Amino acid sequence: MIRNRRTRIVATLGPASRAPETVEALARAGADVFRLNFSHGSHADHQAAFDAVRAAEFAVDRPLAVLADLQGPKLRLGRFAEGSISLAEGQRLRFDLDPAPGDATRAPLPHPEIFKALKPGAPLLLDDGRVRLRVEAAGPDWAETTVVRGDKLSDRKGVAVPGGVIPMSALTDKDHADLAFALRLGVDWIALSFVQRAADMAELRRLVEGRAAVLAKIEKPAAVEALEEILALWDGVMVARGDLGVELEPEDVPVVQKVLLRAARDRGIPAIVATQMLESMISAPTPTRAEASDVANAVYEGADAVMLSAETAAGEYPLDAVSVMDRIITRVERDPNWPTLMLAEHPSLQEEQTDALVAAASHAAHTASASTIVVFTVRGETARRLARTRPLQPVLALAEEPALARRLGLVWGVEPRIAERPMDLEGMTRIAVEAARGLGLAPKGRRLLVLAGAGYDSPGVSDVLRLAYG
Image (cartoon, rainbow, N blue to C red; front, side, top):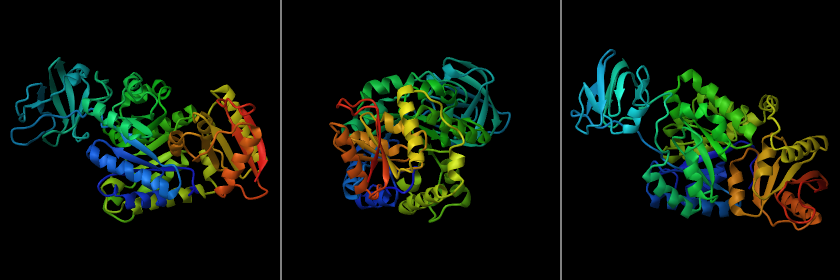
């Protein structure tokens, strides 16, 4: 089974979708990557979902990736004596570490790291930004604030410090346990929440030890400010618009999305646009027109993938959500104006040897009217660098390792498959032609371009660009 579209779909598995027959149906409907959200569910639930994905992979005869999304720190208030309070503009509210239930004048905030990040004049957001406060004074274990925007506030609501870097690890004890479990399962991608700076990935990389690709969820303004350093150290990025929208003004989120997509493409790493893409389909069989436009805009911007969260994890119409997203993407990619809009910005050359090879391949595929480009890859780098040029021909990536083929399932326009490593140039051409023919990508007599980047230790099969015939 191959996709007739370039933009990939990430579907989150949960109670509504982790049954084996549902996972297979989602894969046939268009899901390329399956997300396990470790903010919800038990390890037994995720084990069942993972097993269902691997069974579906066998049934559809196509590599399917599994992404483990770690929860990260959850910064929350303590409890109130009456369960909730009401805050009005101008009211004063004190925070401290005392676990005693709070009232309308003080609230327990059991996170000393937050107090270290507070400064007079800084904003403090509660309950996804519904309540906004201004810090008047702060110490190592207390803060005095004034209510700027009031509302009802109940137990355990979330706390955010816009613009501040909170001095804490992005990995909690729960994350360590979840990560160890996910790696034992054999997931293909690990997503890290609460990324604030490049140093947040050092511990994760040390623990992963190359057993999975790592992806940074950009949900903090501090991460946007440190974007170049962060992207240099990650294998992928997620635009987590829901959490970004808490700490950023609504008008800033679309701009940041474009900045992140542009930066990721320039780096040659895949980028996922996530959160609220078809949210109304949690309880409705069709999306709103605004949601359809949101998905379409991400495709026009050249996103590698778009993601469904609660729509497939807990919604009433998980299969319809994937099918609708597949139809929207396919329709956009049939638009005659889509290539012009998507290719309006050309990424700069960075990896001189590899980029020169893939630039030549893109040009040759266009001028020679090649039906497809077949890429042999050892680490995935050549396939990713080719994808960043956004060639309009299908890209068939052949990898010897199943894990690499699955990871490439997140990359724009790449059809990953498992194939033996060629031992010489003639073997490379034979394998490429047979694989492309078998998938219907190289009709008899049509040209195809064969590409192998650095990394092959077989004679004559490294930095190769060759024209072949189906």
